[in-house]
Amino acid sequence: MKDSEPKGRILIVDDEESMQEFLDIMLTREGYDVETVGSFRGATNLMAEKQFDVIVSDIKMPGGSGLELLKKARSMDPNTTVIMMTAYASLQTAVEALRDGAFDYITKPFEVSQIKYAISRAFENKKLRDENRILKQKIRSSGGAIDDFIAVSKAGKEMKELVKKIAPSDSSVLITGESGTGKEVIAKAIHALSSRSDGPFLAINCGAVPEQLLESELFGHKKGSFTGAFKDKIGLLEAANGGTFLLDEVGTTSPTIQIKLLRALEEREITAVGATQPTKIDVRLLAATNSNLEAMAADGSFREDLYYRLNVFHVHIPPLRERREDIVPVAKFILDKIAGRTEEPAKILSEETAELLEKAPWKGNVRELENVLERALLMADGAEILPKHLPECLRGVAPEVPKRPLATFPDEHLPSIETIEKAYIFWVLMSNEWKKARAAEILGIDASTLYRKIEKYGLKDYEPE
Image (cartoon, rainbow, N blue to C red):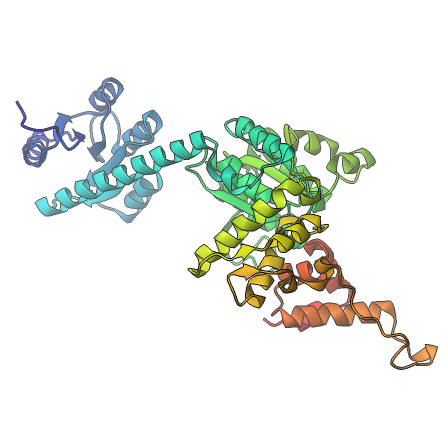
């Protein structure tokens, strides 16, 4: 009888009885519960009967290869950790084993310390993954990342409850709302509350990427498929395998991109630029937009079939002006978040400041509120944010306007609206080191609109490399 519980259960798969016996004795002394078997079929039979924490398998064995056993083990229990052994080492075999999910790859003959270290690392890795899985289960049961969306209003609470209901499914979700309402926060919450939370969450702003580049970014490309394609590139949709992918501002995509997205949804496969064969993908697609996709589908500017494929579930995020009860709680959450980032005490809102925030129109929603609060924190010297620390427009103070022009010019010398716009856009871009997302925010336009104006005015030539 053993004095204590074993550290874990290990299955040794090797057709050499001497190796089985050696590993059995050595690992049993280390405190593990060990079973040995000498063939592929024997291993699969044991795996069907019992659960093993770690499998140590030889590459070559009767009835099937160790690589086949690796795939079988991973399909039966994705949490099983597999270590491969071989006396016929090759780089190709090692790469294939690791690509298929092997935790480690050991060449025979090996030192005792080497196998002990590999197994110790395997159990540490399993422990971390188990803890991570338990934590994510707790997050899913408690509400997860949805708690980052602050809502005390009825509309906000109803929206959060809808997210919790639809997140566990694997269906597509269309997230709508004005700019700055928190569409990506909701997308991340859906991912965190889903069975795909262990997989990657990737996103792309379709409106911020030129059409030619967007196709390559989404679907990948083959070497030589276009000028500058010096090597194969995996697309973001393939990189998100096993996880969730967010198509932000999906309404800005071209008909060509829409057709390929429709195929990705219907057939679960994509074709890279320049490829002749499709690639299977396993991704949950979410889409977000501040456009009216239903109206766009009706007038033909967006594919109707793609709209219905994306809109299996619909989550609409109300703007801040329609849930004014949430404004002050959201502001306090932002202040706490900034304090945590800067490691400084959180500042509070005065009653007058809170009232002004509640009455403001917030056309830019939460994003605008966050920008205002960051500015106020810089202006405030004490522990309290006062009305004087807010922008004049929120305090109801109108900017002074000269009673008469400072100077007059003959009509022929007046610059055109386009000239003024071009100069202003160029100045904003230069002032923000050509960070287009920030520039678009300052200009009050979508990133896609900014890209079109850059092309229209020939400003791309001035962008630093």
